[in-house]
Amino acid sequence: MFSTLLIANRGEIALRIARTCRELGIRTVAVYSNADADTEVLRVADEAIRIGPAAPRRSYLDMSAILSAALQCGAEAIHPGYGFLSEDPDFAEACRAHGVVLVGPPPEVMQRLGDKASARAVMAGAGLPVVPGSTGTVETLADAREVARQIGFPLMIKAAAGGGGMGMTAVCNPADFLTSYQQVRAHAQALFGDGRVYLERLVSPARHVEVQVVCDTVGNAVHLGERECSVQRRQQKLLEETPAPGLPREVAAQLAEAAVRGARAVGYVGAGTFEFLVDRDGRFYFMEVNCRVQVEHPVTEMVTGIDIVREQVVVAAGYPLSLRQAEIAPSGSAIECRINTEDPERGFVPTPGQIVDFRPPGGPFVRVDTHGYAGFRIVPDYDSLLAKVVVWAPDRPGAVARMDRALRELRVAGPGVATTAGFLRQVLAEPAFRAGTYTTSLVDEMTTARAAGFAEQGF
Image 1: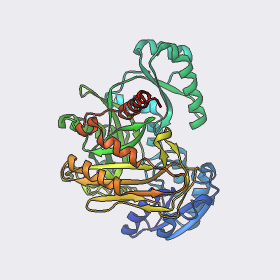
Image 2 (image 1 turned 90 degrees about the horizontal axis):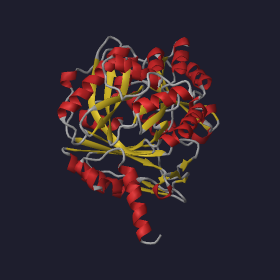
Image 3 (image 1 turned 120 degrees about the vertical axis):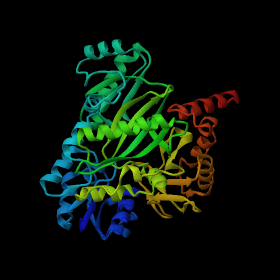
Image 4 (image 1 turned 90 degrees about the vertical axis):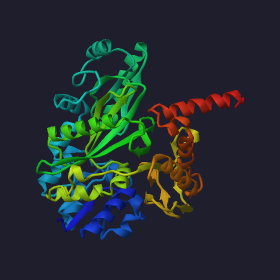
């Protein structure tokens, strides 16, 4: 097992990784930017190294700064968490070249799956159903128009290097195609340094369901069940739950089998997530693979009792999986709510500022992953995620009730600071959510209904 591991991330995920490593007897080194000098992980890790100013490209995205810190402290491994460098094949290759283990899949696998168009082709070859669309990327406007004509409208234009809900747009009207195509290409170039795009038919209404897999270096691969991720705003998740409500168990089993088959096909190593769209008839289509631990991994941990970060680290150290598929028996229902410091009343605009009062919820079967505390300053340089409130109950109605109670207890206050907690309570109360029949359009429908209500009242 590793003796020292460097955590190349910040916030709640850095703290969560440090805790698991402490239980494994691994010394941890946290890196931090100037803006994170007061972050909670610095009090939990065994050592801390400053790597640069607040700007991510000069700190958490600076490969040389991260690797220099790892070599300086003698770390044998780096855990990248999620975001930042976690899915960067160049960083994975650089780690390999310097003799440092990156906790994640090999750079070759990361490269194949990080390119969304390439991943579609690989998974189609492995027999996974994919949404009808272009074969690879479309290189010219003429090619794009021809593919659009073949698959029809509505359709999606997606960045090949995209991820995390960024770099994609829906086009419903052919008259809007040219403008949308040019905008996605420009946006992709600005965000990812790669302007290539591909086209897919828009599956709507649809559910966003993902499957957690864990694989080792000797060919063992298991799944830990599925997660429902359809509560989204701007293609970014707000709430996740497991098991997916109302999803026929035979469809869930097919999804899981497809994910494991896909993982084996590319020689996947570590924890990863296969994401699918499921239409109203129960047909499912592969979307992408996230080559990292997911923000929402705690809901799976709550129903399985398995520490996914531990499995990541153990596999990265070269040990075989301690898990066997027949031994994995999810129980009950779990829900996670992402508490972002955003104002739902103003289109989810971020609200940085200083927290003066922070009281997380408690009680039985309530877990809160957070780096927040009274006095903590939320800076505008990073993602707005402050906390993840996760609950478990023997059944879904019990989990919904427990989450509503937990969100009522949560207290985050500070000048100008708003959170998504109140909005998430509204989601829990929605009839479609309660019935488990909601799709990825739920938040848009709520927003539209609310705007119509204001109009009727003369606002």
